[in-house]
Length: 129
Image 1: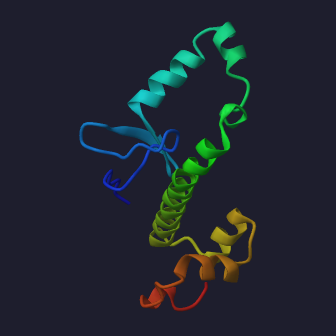
Image 2 (image 1 turned 120 degrees about the vertical axis):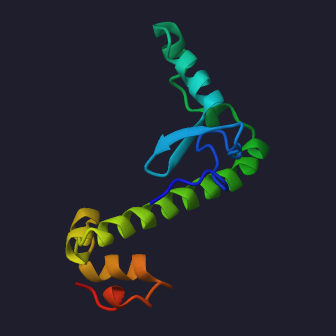
Image 3 (image 1 turned 30 degrees about the vertical axis):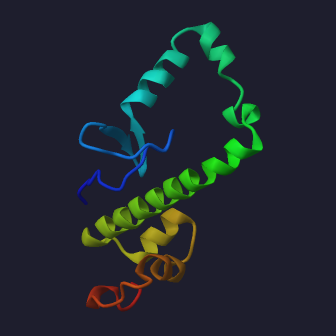
């Protein structure tokens, strides 16, 4: 699975990836350099850490919260795309749907249905196994 930055967003502030704005991250979540600096500073001293204990949405207006919804959806879709890619890697390594389902806490059939929807053409995906 190759990382392609185009189309990705920072999971923390919603800014779009660009060649000038690189991201770090893993497991579908991405973070821009500006957020890394902001959060590094936020956790740099005990006093700053104590001040950062309240969630940001407590201070947000309803309008700000509504404006954030598209970024939350985009982050969710980004993580789901990563999850599908991750399961694809496991399948390429010969991991069974039974093992994948067990790791996800669902049945083999449920895992197969979730991750092959719309992708049923390859022979190895034709039946759960």
